Amino acid sequence: MSREDAAFLTLPDGRKLCYHSRGGGPDSLHQIFYLHGVLSCRLEVLGTSEQVLQDLKARLIGVDRPGYGQSDPHPERTAQTCCQDLICLADSLGIDRFYVVGCSGGGPYAWSTLHHLGSRVLGLLTLSGAGPSGMLTGEERLRLHEGHEPGGLPEFTRTMVRNILSSRTALWWVHTLAGANLIYRWLQQLMANVLDKMAPVDAACIKSMHPEYQPQIVAQALAQKPAAAAALLEDLAIGMATWPWDLTKLPHEQTRNIHIWHGHGDKQVPVVFSEAYHRLIPSSKLHIIDNGGHFAYYMGSTYTQRLALSQLIAGASRSAI
Image (cartoon, rainbow, N blue to C red; front, side, top):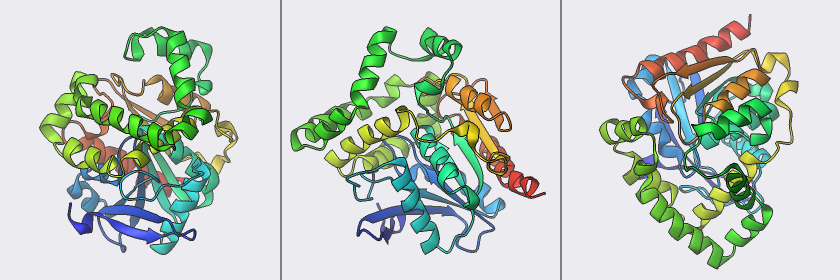
């Protein structure tokens, strides 16, 4: 990987934060921070069309969360500490107000950014965004467990696995050398066969249009080896636990430019989560792609990307009226 794919900021506590920009430069009209999914990295921004970003006069900045890619681990990472890292990066780049995009497991961090930094956030876009099961109603949980989630495990087993993986005990264990190495070996096997576990439409999308996924994005996500294993469980603990804020109590001015995109055939993050977000924040705009999977944003032509980003940018102007 070339050096220009990795830019660095030294944070106040001495940690190194890694990011990569795509599209326009510092003088772009629109600055957008991109928060990547679980077991991914800043290079997810490679999937967004350079031409679309240039046409929109936008810069898309992918940021490695601690432990992923080239960002140093954070021993006590929370959603709020990730917001603090992001604001340090924005300040260092001279960005006052910005948009936030959260993809898949990056969704909870996008919502956290809106909650903690709302006065600086011009708009929020989630792509196949994950969330805690506690946000679902009984009817939504029923739909979640009736074929929307892969694996065929009974509900009790799925719940037990979730609780174990997202527990603080698991986090302590994975930070030990033996635990981290064991999880890392499992992750290597999982990611080597990840295309086989996806919806066919997603696997086809990656094979035909985004060959960078495994050799670049996945490889870079796991670059720090055991630290990436810890980052995985940290993401699960943060994203799946009950959040320490209430989406329904966000100030009205922070909810006028929220766009929620999801593929109906998503096997990794069922569409019911995006439907729940829209239920909790009725002023948000829900966009369901009928023939889309987890990577619906990247599929087909650049039409979806252009539409999603242009609506996000236009929404900031409407919100200011």
